[in-house]
Length: 287
Image (cartoon, rainbow, N blue to C red; front, top):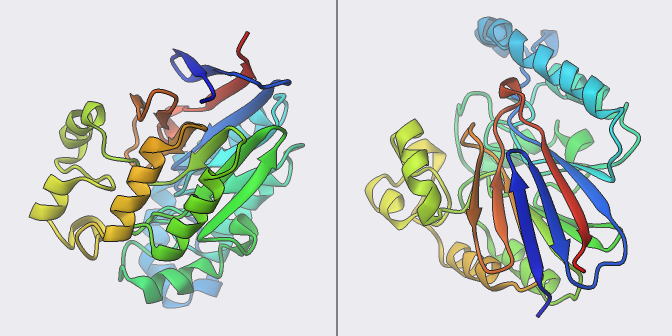
Protein backbone atom coordinates (compact mmCIF):
# COMPACT_ATOMS: atom_id res chain seq x y z
CA UNK A 1 0.00 0.00 0.00
CA UNK A 2 1.40 3.39 -1.03
CA UNK A 3 1.45 5.91 1.83
CA UNK A 4 -0.09 9.31 1.09
CA UNK A 5 -0.04 12.25 3.52
CA UNK A 6 -2.02 15.50 3.14
CA UNK A 7 -1.03 18.84 4.65
CA UNK A 8 -3.79 21.43 4.09
CA UNK A 9 -3.67 25.19 4.65
CA UNK A 10 -6.83 26.90 3.38
CA UNK A 11 -6.85 26.42 -0.41
CA UNK A 12 -3.30 25.03 -0.64
CA UNK A 13 -2.64 21.33 -0.14
CA UNK A 14 0.72 19.59 -0.11
CA UNK A 15 0.20 15.92 -0.86
CA UNK A 16 3.22 13.74 -0.15
CA UNK A 17 3.22 10.36 -1.85
CA UNK A 18 5.48 7.42 -1.17
CA UNK A 19 7.53 6.45 -4.22
CA UNK A 20 7.10 9.71 -6.12
CA UNK A 21 10.34 10.84 -7.77
CA UNK A 22 9.36 14.35 -8.90
CA UNK A 23 7.04 17.21 -7.91
CA UNK A 24 3.83 18.28 -9.67
CA UNK A 25 1.35 21.11 -9.24
CA UNK A 26 -2.36 20.95 -10.10
CA UNK A 27 -4.58 24.02 -10.03
CA UNK A 28 -8.30 23.58 -9.37
CA UNK A 29 -11.14 25.83 -10.57
CA UNK A 30 -14.85 25.13 -10.46
CA UNK A 31 -18.26 26.74 -10.89
CA UNK A 32 -17.33 29.76 -13.00
CA UNK A 33 -20.90 30.04 -14.38
CA UNK A 34 -20.16 32.02 -17.52
CA UNK A 35 -23.29 32.94 -19.47
CA UNK A 36 -23.20 34.85 -22.73
CA UNK A 37 -25.92 34.60 -25.37
CA UNK A 38 -26.25 35.89 -28.94
CA UNK A 39 -28.24 35.35 -32.14
CA UNK A 40 -26.93 31.79 -32.43
CA UNK A 41 -29.16 30.85 -29.49
CA UNK A 42 -32.39 31.75 -31.31
CA UNK A 43 -35.35 32.34 -29.01
CA UNK A 44 -33.22 31.57 -25.97
CA UNK A 45 -31.24 34.78 -26.55
CA UNK A 46 -34.11 36.95 -25.37
CA UNK A 47 -35.08 34.52 -22.61
CA UNK A 48 -31.63 34.50 -21.04
CA UNK A 49 -30.39 38.00 -21.87
CA UNK A 50 -31.24 39.33 -18.40
CA UNK A 51 -29.63 36.34 -16.70
CA UNK A 52 -26.49 36.81 -18.80
CA UNK A 53 -26.31 40.45 -17.73
CA UNK A 54 -26.48 39.40 -14.07
CA UNK A 55 -23.54 37.07 -14.70
CA UNK A 56 -21.17 39.93 -15.59
CA UNK A 57 -19.41 39.63 -12.18
CA UNK A 58 -18.75 35.97 -13.05
CA UNK A 59 -17.19 36.97 -16.37
CA UNK A 60 -14.96 39.52 -14.66
CA UNK A 61 -13.91 37.02 -11.98
CA UNK A 62 -13.10 34.40 -14.61
CA UNK A 63 -11.08 36.81 -16.76
CA UNK A 64 -9.11 37.99 -13.72
CA UNK A 65 -8.49 34.41 -12.63
CA UNK A 66 -7.20 33.47 -16.09
CA UNK A 67 -4.81 36.43 -16.01
CA UNK A 68 -3.58 35.30 -12.62
CA UNK A 69 -3.05 31.63 -13.32
CA UNK A 70 -1.46 31.98 -16.75
CA UNK A 71 1.65 33.33 -15.00
CA UNK A 72 1.72 30.59 -12.35
CA UNK A 73 3.91 27.54 -12.59
CA UNK A 74 1.71 24.47 -12.88
CA UNK A 75 1.46 21.15 -14.67
CA UNK A 76 -2.32 20.93 -15.11
CA UNK A 77 -5.50 22.94 -14.57
CA UNK A 78 -8.47 20.95 -13.31
CA UNK A 79 -11.95 22.26 -14.14
CA UNK A 80 -14.56 20.37 -12.12
CA UNK A 81 -17.71 21.54 -13.87
CA UNK A 82 -20.14 24.41 -14.36
CA UNK A 83 -17.55 26.42 -16.22
CA UNK A 84 -20.48 27.79 -18.21
CA UNK A 85 -24.03 28.39 -17.08
CA UNK A 86 -25.46 26.95 -20.29
CA UNK A 87 -24.07 25.44 -23.51
CA UNK A 88 -24.26 28.58 -25.63
CA UNK A 89 -21.55 29.12 -28.24
CA UNK A 90 -20.65 32.54 -26.84
CA UNK A 91 -20.20 31.13 -23.32
CA UNK A 92 -17.89 28.36 -24.51
CA UNK A 93 -15.90 30.81 -26.66
CA UNK A 94 -15.42 33.13 -23.69
CA UNK A 95 -14.23 30.24 -21.53
CA UNK A 96 -11.84 28.98 -24.21
CA UNK A 97 -10.37 32.45 -24.79
CA UNK A 98 -8.95 32.26 -21.28
CA UNK A 99 -7.93 28.61 -21.41
CA UNK A 100 -6.12 29.03 -24.73
CA UNK A 101 -3.70 31.44 -23.04
CA UNK A 102 -2.46 28.87 -20.54
CA UNK A 103 1.04 27.40 -20.98
CA UNK A 104 -0.10 24.04 -19.55
CA UNK A 105 -3.00 21.66 -20.32
CA UNK A 106 -6.39 21.38 -18.65
CA UNK A 107 -8.87 18.60 -17.91
CA UNK A 108 -12.61 19.30 -17.73
CA UNK A 109 -15.57 17.36 -16.42
CA UNK A 110 -19.11 18.61 -17.11
CA UNK A 111 -21.35 20.05 -14.43
CA UNK A 112 -25.15 20.07 -14.43
CA UNK A 113 -25.26 23.67 -15.71
CA UNK A 114 -22.67 23.24 -18.46
CA UNK A 115 -25.01 21.28 -20.73
CA UNK A 116 -28.43 22.61 -19.74
CA UNK A 117 -30.22 25.92 -20.26
CA UNK A 118 -31.44 26.55 -16.69
CA UNK A 119 -32.55 22.92 -16.38
CA UNK A 120 -35.13 23.30 -19.13
CA UNK A 121 -35.25 19.52 -19.16
CA UNK A 122 -32.92 17.28 -17.19
CA UNK A 123 -32.56 13.92 -18.92
CA UNK A 124 -30.12 11.92 -21.01
CA UNK A 125 -31.40 13.31 -24.31
CA UNK A 126 -30.82 16.87 -23.11
CA UNK A 127 -27.39 15.87 -21.77
CA UNK A 128 -26.26 14.43 -25.10
CA UNK A 129 -27.51 17.48 -26.99
CA UNK A 130 -25.89 19.91 -24.57
CA UNK A 131 -22.52 18.18 -24.68
CA UNK A 132 -22.05 18.94 -28.39
CA UNK A 133 -21.30 22.69 -27.99
CA UNK A 134 -18.95 21.83 -25.10
CA UNK A 135 -16.59 19.89 -27.38
CA UNK A 136 -13.76 22.49 -27.09
CA UNK A 137 -13.82 21.86 -23.32
CA UNK A 138 -14.20 18.07 -23.19
CA UNK A 139 -12.42 17.44 -26.54
CA UNK A 140 -14.50 14.42 -27.41
CA UNK A 141 -14.33 12.78 -23.98
CA UNK A 142 -17.35 14.09 -22.04
CA UNK A 143 -18.25 10.97 -20.05
CA UNK A 144 -14.85 9.84 -18.76
CA UNK A 145 -11.19 10.27 -19.60
CA UNK A 146 -7.72 9.69 -18.16
CA UNK A 147 -4.57 11.72 -18.71
CA UNK A 148 -1.06 11.45 -17.38
CA UNK A 149 0.47 14.33 -15.45
CA UNK A 150 3.98 13.04 -14.94
CA UNK A 151 3.68 10.24 -12.38
CA UNK A 152 0.12 11.28 -11.44
CA UNK A 153 -2.85 9.70 -13.24
CA UNK A 154 -5.73 12.20 -13.48
CA UNK A 155 -9.21 10.82 -14.19
CA UNK A 156 -12.49 12.56 -14.85
CA UNK A 157 -15.97 11.04 -14.66
CA UNK A 158 -19.10 13.02 -15.51
CA UNK A 159 -21.54 12.56 -12.62
CA UNK A 160 -23.55 15.71 -13.38
CA UNK A 161 -26.78 13.69 -13.42
CA UNK A 162 -26.00 12.45 -9.86
CA UNK A 163 -25.18 8.98 -11.17
CA UNK A 164 -22.25 6.93 -12.46
CA UNK A 165 -23.25 4.58 -15.26
CA UNK A 166 -22.06 1.06 -16.10
CA UNK A 167 -19.50 2.21 -18.69
CA UNK A 168 -18.02 4.74 -16.27
CA UNK A 169 -17.92 2.09 -13.54
CA UNK A 170 -15.92 -0.23 -15.79
CA UNK A 171 -13.55 2.66 -16.60
CA UNK A 172 -12.95 3.21 -12.87
CA UNK A 173 -12.35 -0.49 -12.29
CA UNK A 174 -9.71 -0.59 -15.02
CA UNK A 175 -8.02 2.62 -13.92
CA UNK A 176 -7.98 1.79 -10.23
CA UNK A 177 -6.14 -1.44 -11.05
CA UNK A 178 -3.13 0.61 -12.16
CA UNK A 179 -0.16 1.34 -9.89
CA UNK A 180 0.17 5.14 -10.31
CA UNK A 181 -1.09 7.60 -7.69
CA UNK A 182 -4.37 9.06 -8.91
CA UNK A 183 -6.64 12.09 -8.76
CA UNK A 184 -10.36 11.82 -9.59
CA UNK A 185 -12.27 14.82 -10.95
CA UNK A 186 -16.08 14.88 -10.60
CA UNK A 187 -18.58 17.72 -10.40
CA UNK A 188 -21.00 16.60 -7.71
CA UNK A 189 -19.23 15.65 -4.47
CA UNK A 190 -19.46 12.37 -2.64
CA UNK A 191 -21.82 12.52 0.31
CA UNK A 192 -19.55 12.26 3.34
CA UNK A 193 -20.62 12.57 7.00
CA UNK A 194 -18.37 15.58 7.60
CA UNK A 195 -19.85 17.43 4.58
CA UNK A 196 -23.58 16.71 4.95
CA UNK A 197 -24.36 19.33 7.60
CA UNK A 198 -22.65 22.15 5.71
CA UNK A 199 -24.36 21.13 2.47
CA UNK A 200 -27.82 21.00 4.05
CA UNK A 201 -27.20 24.29 5.84
CA UNK A 202 -26.54 26.05 2.52
CA UNK A 203 -28.89 24.23 0.13
CA UNK A 204 -31.52 22.77 2.50
CA UNK A 205 -30.88 19.42 0.81
CA UNK A 206 -28.01 16.92 0.72
CA UNK A 207 -27.40 17.44 -3.02
CA UNK A 208 -24.48 15.03 -3.33
CA UNK A 209 -24.07 11.61 -4.90
CA UNK A 210 -24.66 8.56 -2.78
CA UNK A 211 -26.75 10.27 -0.12
CA UNK A 212 -29.46 7.76 0.80
CA UNK A 213 -31.51 10.16 2.93
CA UNK A 214 -31.78 12.79 0.22
CA UNK A 215 -32.46 10.25 -2.52
CA UNK A 216 -35.14 8.55 -0.46
CA UNK A 217 -37.00 11.79 0.24
CA UNK A 218 -36.56 13.74 -2.99
CA UNK A 219 -36.29 11.51 -6.07
CA UNK A 220 -36.47 13.77 -9.09
CA UNK A 221 -35.44 16.86 -7.13
CA UNK A 222 -32.48 19.03 -8.15
CA UNK A 223 -32.32 17.24 -11.48
CA UNK A 224 -31.82 13.74 -10.05
CA UNK A 225 -33.94 11.44 -12.19
CA UNK A 226 -33.92 8.41 -9.93
CA UNK A 227 -32.70 6.94 -6.69
CA UNK A 228 -28.99 6.16 -6.53
CA UNK A 229 -28.32 3.32 -8.96
CA UNK A 230 -26.52 0.07 -8.24
CA UNK A 231 -23.64 1.21 -10.48
CA UNK A 232 -23.30 4.47 -8.57
CA UNK A 233 -23.12 2.66 -5.23
CA UNK A 234 -20.48 0.30 -6.65
CA UNK A 235 -18.46 3.24 -7.97
CA UNK A 236 -18.57 4.97 -4.59
CA UNK A 237 -17.32 1.79 -2.94
CA UNK A 238 -14.48 1.54 -5.47
CA UNK A 239 -13.50 5.17 -4.84
CA UNK A 240 -13.57 4.67 -1.07
CA UNK A 241 -11.36 1.57 -1.26
CA UNK A 242 -8.82 2.61 -3.91
CA UNK A 243 -5.44 2.67 -2.15
CA UNK A 244 -3.71 4.70 -4.88
CA UNK A 245 -6.35 7.44 -5.02
CA UNK A 246 -4.91 10.59 -3.41
CA UNK A 247 -7.62 13.17 -4.05
CA UNK A 248 -11.14 13.77 -5.33
CA UNK A 249 -11.62 17.27 -6.80
CA UNK A 250 -15.19 18.54 -7.15
CA UNK A 251 -17.51 21.55 -7.00
CA UNK A 252 -21.28 22.08 -7.29
CA UNK A 253 -21.94 23.33 -3.75
CA UNK A 254 -20.30 26.78 -4.11
CA UNK A 255 -18.30 26.61 -0.91
CA UNK A 256 -14.92 25.23 0.05
CA UNK A 257 -14.59 22.10 2.18
CA UNK A 258 -12.15 19.23 2.73
CA UNK A 259 -13.29 15.79 3.83
CA UNK A 260 -11.56 12.47 4.37
CA UNK A 261 -12.61 9.75 1.92
CA UNK A 262 -10.16 7.06 3.08
CA UNK A 263 -6.80 6.68 4.83
CA UNK A 264 -5.03 8.02 1.73
CA UNK A 265 -7.67 10.15 0.02
CA UNK A 266 -9.18 13.58 0.71
CA UNK A 267 -12.10 15.14 -1.15
CA UNK A 268 -11.32 18.77 -2.05
CA UNK A 269 -14.55 20.67 -2.65
CA UNK A 270 -13.85 23.97 -4.36
CA UNK A 271 -15.67 27.27 -3.97
CA UNK A 272 -17.04 29.13 -6.98
CA UNK A 273 -14.80 31.43 -8.99
CA UNK A 274 -16.56 34.63 -7.92
CA UNK A 275 -15.52 33.83 -4.33
CA UNK A 276 -11.90 33.93 -5.50
CA UNK A 277 -11.32 30.23 -4.97
CA UNK A 278 -8.25 28.71 -6.59
CA UNK A 279 -7.17 25.33 -5.30
CA UNK A 280 -3.43 24.61 -5.38
CA UNK A 281 -2.33 21.01 -4.95
CA UNK A 282 1.39 20.30 -4.76
CA UNK A 283 2.36 16.65 -5.09
CA UNK A 284 5.76 15.77 -3.62
CA UNK A 285 7.76 12.72 -2.59
CA UNK A 286 7.13 11.39 0.89
CA UNK A 287 10.55 11.18 2.54
